[in-house]
Length: 234
Image (cartoon, rainbow, N blue to C red; front, side, top):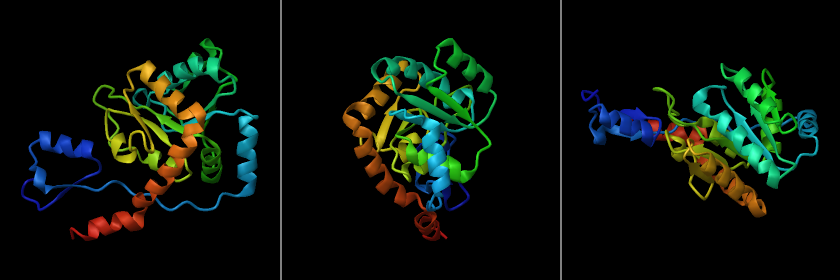
């Protein structure tokens, strides 16, 4: 790798991994992945999304594979505690994966059937509608075995709809989330930190303020801006 002019890393986290492997720091450029601008969501999908929430007020969401690294389990446990303060809380999990049955079992054990919803195989418009009607994107990823979150494009996709995010300190989430400005970075291994991060965002509707800043910050991740960074090194 040291024979090439530049190595592009998708986050500062992956840049540091490359340095650990012996790549010279000055050769590494960080260019985060890009997103397409959002398109208008059809009204029928927005209405369907509102029906899904059944009047629930505090709306958490994760869009990702159901695997250990994504840490849905700890979020569900946090929801159990949060519902004592916010009885109208709801957590929407969109995706599929190996952990789905275990997560559904946990929801049943904690009697959270009215507070956790699982969805998969839905249209892009419906997914976007649910995101746009949600309040906080929550994905406090952890290192699991050798797997880790390299960047977390889903944080940016959520930000495009005005959602702040709560991400884990392990991995590249901090490239997509500015702590205490567009969301929170927490220790995904700590249930207390996940709980308190969600609680802080919900208190006095702070998530609206964080989400407005997240929406502005998401603009820099649009492909037309990301492509400029590549053109500068070609």
